[in-house]
Length: 504
Image 1 (spheres, helix red, strand yellow):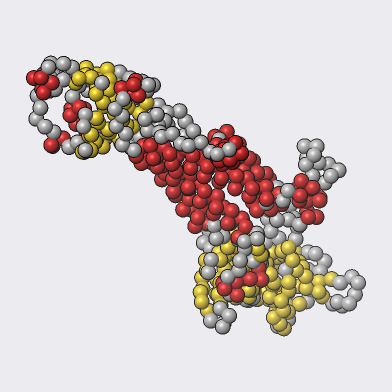
Image 2: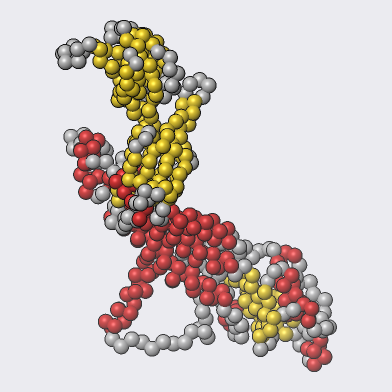
C-alpha cells in the first residue's frame, strides 16, 4: 500500500543516532544538468544504506542494508518493467513498422534542428537586405546579370526563389514547416516519455538493478522515516510503499520543455499566417477627400481573405502639423471619420505617428505627409487652388513648389510668380524675374503685391500619408512569445528524485 509520508504522523520508534543527513547531502554533489529540448543522457545517483530499527535490535541485532537511488533524468526502463513484444510477421512488415520510428529519430535530431534555425535566420536576414514587394523591373536594375553580386547572385535568384516576397516564399515556409515538424517529433519521442517516466512511481526491489546505476553509495545506520522527514523539509513529495521510499520535486520542470516547443510552434504559426493571410496598402490623401479601405489594401498571400470592414469609407476631415521652436516639424495629425455602406459614421479619431486607428481588424498608421495645394486670391478674385509639386533637393528635407502664370499663358515663354514651401506654415514668393518678393503665412490675410498683382495666401492644404494593414497572426505571435518566456523560466526548475530504497 502506497502512503504519503507525513512528519506529523511519523511513528515514535527508537532509532539509533545517525550522522547520515548533513546539509551537504541535500545540497552537495548531486548537480542536475540543465534540460535539453532533445535527447540527453540520463544521470542517476544510487545510495546504499544500512538501517537499524528498534524491532531489528530486539529480534536479531542484524543490520538491514538499504539502497537509495537519486536521479535527475528519465532512466531507461529495466528488464523487469519491460515485457517482451511479439516479433512482426515478415521482414518487409518489420521494415514498415520501423520506418516511422526512423523518421522520427531523424527529425528529432538536435544538429538538424539547429541547422534549420540557422537557415531561417539567414533567410530572414536576406529578406531584410533585399527590398520586398517591388516590381520585376526594379530587380532587373538592382541585380543585373552583367554585374552579379558575389559573382553569381542576380535577379534570377530573387524572382525564381521568391526572395522578392521572402516571408511567404516556398523556401522560407518550407523551412518553417520542417522546423515545426522537428519540434513535434522531439516532443513526441523525448519530452513526453520523460514526463511519463518522471510521473511514474517506481519502487524497484532488485538490488542488482540499483547497483547498475551510475552513482551509488552506502549510508550506514540510516532511518527510512528520518530520511522521509528530511526530504519533505527540502521540498520533496515523499511516498512510502512497504520498505521502499520514493520522493520527487520540481516536476513542473519536466513539463516546461513541452511548453517551450508548443510556444515556438505558436509563434511560427502566427508568423506564417501574418505572411500569407495579411493585406497591406498605402495612400496619400489630401485634406477633405475620401477613400475606401478595400481600394487601398492588397493581399500578401494565398490565405488573404477580405472582411466587411473593407467596404468602410474613410474621410480626411483635417490634416495639421506641430512644430518645434526652430520651425522643424515635430508631429503631424490626421482627423479621420469612418463611414459604413449606409453613410453612417461608425468611428472618428485623430491619429498621429505612434498612435494608429484600429477598426474591424484593420490598422491605419500615420506615416508621412505631403503638400497638396495652395489656395490663393488674385486681385480679389478666387480662391484658386494651385497644385503643389515635390521638388528634388539634396538630403532628406522636403520642398514643394507651384507656379502662377502671368500674362499670355499660350506663349512658349510663359512667365509668372513662383511659390515655394518647406511645410504648411510659411510660403516664399518670387516675381517673374526670379527675385525674392516676400514671405506670407497661410490664413494671415495679409496681401503681397508682385508685378502689379495683389496676392493673398488663403490656405495651405496638406495631404496625409497613411499605411493600412491587416495582420491576423499578431494575437498568436504575442501569445506565443508570452508562453515562451513563462515556460523558459519554469524550465529552470530542477527536477530531482529519490527513486528507491529497497532491502538487500
